[in-house]
Length: 257
Image (cartoon, rainbow, N blue to C red; front, side):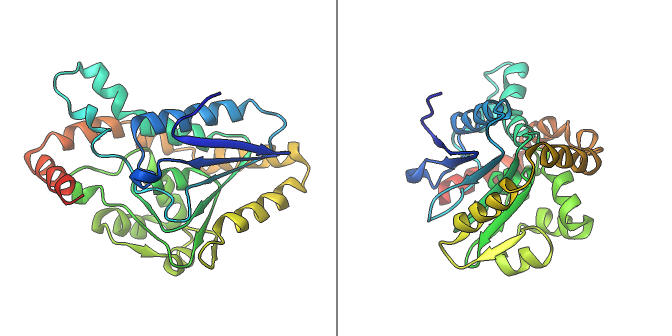
């Protein structure tokens, strides 16, 4: 399978997927998200792969959704069905990664913003460099946090912290992220991928079938209500994004960038 915006390689039973749009700070374009989704679907069928690492580069994991490229959901020249399909790309991406039977570990250097954190919380574990940060700027852009991220975030950190992260759009450093359970390990700068790989090796030392069964059972319990809470996120995105204040906020953000 050929990819332009991600790199996928395997080493024995371990696969590594790297976001690769360095000139755009690994911003998640529609094309990149579709490739990540396709990679997840392909890996899900691999019985010879038992752990998957997801990473960016030494500068950042990702700056989040590419506002210029993902704005098709607001393009009134498209049909409503076409706009909903574009609005649902992130939802399908995170769902595909959450449903991988293999253990998934995200390595974060620099920062994981918006959609970057959304896909990170869809995975099993997160490793973060101690000088990195995460943030969810969606509401400051006049749109709700979607992609199914709110149920996953709430399950990890609880409702009060999930509201604070989502509504106040604050940057959260690695130490605070670790303390609240948003990430699982913190490393010195440059060490996130190595630590994620070490965790993967611990997974690979366990009987593979039992690992997959156990992950599936935990996910079944933890995500039982997620579909009901998040399936209308794409319509919330389109509704809120059509407001005057939302359009103004996004235009200002694009001008700043």
